[in-house]
Image (cartoon, rainbow, N blue to C red; front, side, top):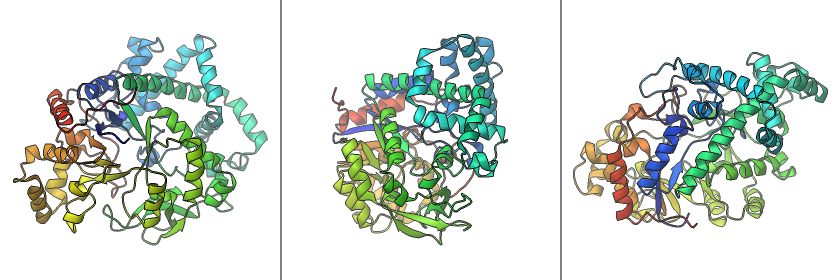
Length: 503
């Protein structure tokens, strides 16, 4: 991570697809080819964990920290390996412009998965599937039982299940596993399909000198297999309800802070357990990705916890986490520590100290560069440091075009014009901003595809101040502009960012 390179941010769900949601199929390979042709060395994505309509399909509020999102499985690849027939693909799900229609996509994919599982069962034993189940059993057994029980109890949160299942009585779980054997096998089968398709795609990217940057949400959803199976690692009361909820204080995105609703960790219990759950999670993700971005990194040092029942995050308080002990033992297990610390928001000296001690690069956001005492702003290109990942914006930001038009005032617009050296031209704004990142000393620069294409605010991925309607953006077919990739390639060469990774 200490060589000049660049890349693009695009989640798998946002790839073009006639199946209602982007997937690991042909368009993913096509995008990888475009990255390689444009000399881009990184493809950054969002978390691959299962999503749920109850949490607005957010990949940051998953029911399984170790699991994969079956919606991203490619029907075309299932067809290719004989797990579907051509007629199974019809009728196609409803489309809604450049937004995912989740109910339609979910209903469509579930029908295909039932069909694929039926064909799979007729083939008899599959050694690769059996091997996958053994290798991933530490999380897969609990996951498959959790989703099967959740279906049996009509989607109810696990804390509302009958007591023997809520409290994980061993005999009750054993009986349930026998009764739900078929459902559990199907759940494992979908995880197996995802892993196989993902492994092939990652190998394809790596062979073209593209490294994958994954994303680890710091928290998990309360209604998750992780909290159900490891309730002692979270701050819950005697009824297994959260005592505190995670969030962050008022900031750039929201005057009342952000109340995420996740239970917070019981770090004392994790310390006694030698962080086994977190160690397994980090190791799991480092097998999936070349680099991992850890979301809300400051939560490993000090975290904002809000008493359960509060309507906003305003009345929270900071609590300490054993960061030095945690990262010290993590460094012993993973000496290279290919981790990006998402260090945006309120960053205190103790967070900086941990990042510097363990040489973890942070993030800089160009959109944040033009406010306040802007010439001394740490995000303005002439102040950006080498060891960082520099972005025009992230999945939480507006697009550059809408940011300029609707989010900043006249003074900031004048500052942008002064910095680029001429009046702002809307049609060229995104390239001017990309150029500012490219020519900086930052080792790595990453751009959301929306910014490369100069798209407006209707293409935004997430608005943290809005609690519904996010995570739906997808590219329409033909929108991946060859001319844009050509211009990106030219800039990459001009600013010395076409450096290959070591073989």
